Image (cartoon, rainbow, N blue to C red):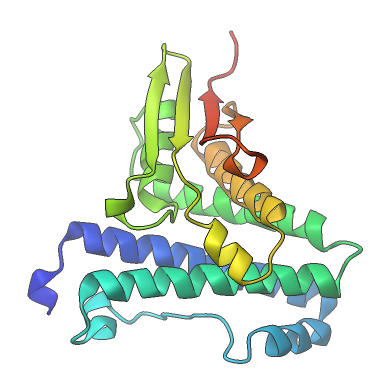
Length: 223
């Protein structure tokens, strides 16, 4: 089966692993602050725990499964588990969970971005942002084609999502969709901070608020 794996499959698997790592990062942060109560919360919400791929290569995990269905299944599993975890933490720790989640999603995005931007030392900030986020932010399968990037002059980049592929998984987990959307935005903002501290992101429209598409601008600092 490995002979049929191409770069796009490995890129997708890497996106899935980043999302899975983010969930474990969040879990560890809450464990550090709230201790055993977090383990009890995890066991109740996700009896099988979070997905952990370890160092297993894609072809080993894939086995004889069809690659497209396999990757889509991983996406569904990882995103639903993350939404379930977030929901459980919000319920169990109502006093500080939302603020802490925002901080940790941002931090994970920043740490991830710092690793990835090293491979693009000469890229302009907006180009580097598009490459880092576009190649590493989990948003469905490549065939879904919901994301697009468009330069607005030399100072800004417009990012458009024609559909919210996360929403069904969030709703399946009983997660507050607007909170989940805000957390995803925080992760992307963290990536932007890693690419260039001066980049700013402005949300223009959201499908969750009734818009036909999600749209934001990423801008260089004003001169």
